Length: 124
Ligand SMILES: [Zn+2]
Ligand SMILES: [Zn+2]
Ligand SMILES: [Zn+2]
Image (cartoon, rainbow, N blue to C red; front, top):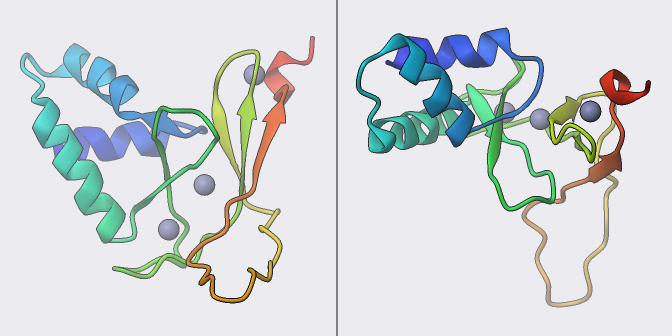
């Protein structure tokens, strides 16, 4: 099951939702336990294998990390692009979120940069 989930990430060039993973696994395995999928995603995230791709939608999506990430240490702060036409979310690794100064008394833990519009597959 874990291997199957990992393969979905390796084969995908976009961020995937848990729903997409479950649907894909259903074609391979007879029974897909949602809790197992959820737990595996959490474990992968903790181990620095995948990260949450914040895309401004209500559906959490995950994408494969770069080699820079290790257990409990993600170093892949980058922008994410959400396509309004096909609904896919992509990692934009060459764009980093800007350093922002929070007002006095606020402590910034993370900053997310989300772009939306039309992806290159949807241009024509
Ligand atoms: Zn990461
Ligand atoms: Zn698109
Ligand atoms: Zn990403």
